Length: 279
DNA sequence: CGTGCGGCCTGAATGC
DNA sequence: TGCATTCAGGCCGCAC
Image (cartoon, rainbow, N blue to C red; front, side, top):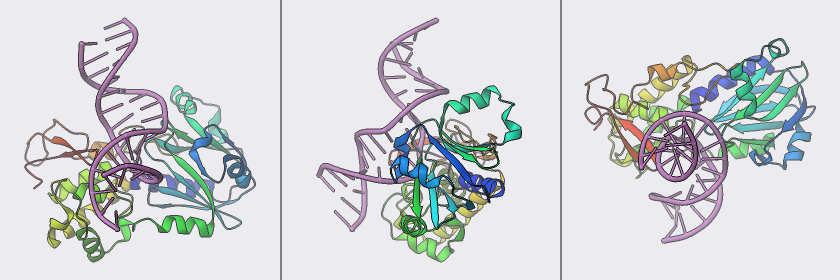
């Protein structure tokens, strides 16, 4: 599923591909995914808008438009954008046809290309805000891990009583870290997912901060993880799934100590970990 | 106020 | 083989 590295990959690909383009027409097929304003208003508000920039904040893609407006999209579990350019259009593979089945909204651009939002589970969301509304909306979220100083991270996490796994995945505390990268970071830091955040030592938290940066940066370099349905804007998979250490590896041997990797449920989420390496 | 859990969805995997 | 059930999970909203 898309987490910070996957959304970052989407943002940088789209930034290079569609900045300067104008949205000519919007076709939506699942109105419930459009959260603000009403779907018809959302669509008509976007038609004619020029795309100035595409960036990431938390797991949201932020499309900056002319007229001081911003479209925010969240991929949730299975959402991703696919950019079909005119020259690529004619070669429609089976995989692409399958993708089309899950296209929930299409943005027709002024160069003949179509930006589609594909989402099997329809959990994804789209919103159109004024710039001010968008900043207020995003302002409710916790800080970005990649630009968070170690000291800030330590004070942020150590004030939490909940289990560390749950805290790392709470976007009100810190954004962008989902189930994959929280498992990976906790493994690298040697911390058991059920440890209470406020029981962790300052040294442990500093180490955790360091490995979070490390794992996120590595995943960005590898263009994300394609464990379930994630694809980039060209429909290609990321590579981090081949590099992952514990996530989804229940029953396999730990790379460090060969102990069988276990799985528990923490706050309703599956957590994979090594009981020998993580205390 | 902090915490925990149900619900949204659908395809893949599993169970009988 | 085929049908039914379970699982996956980010985030919100609601109950305690």
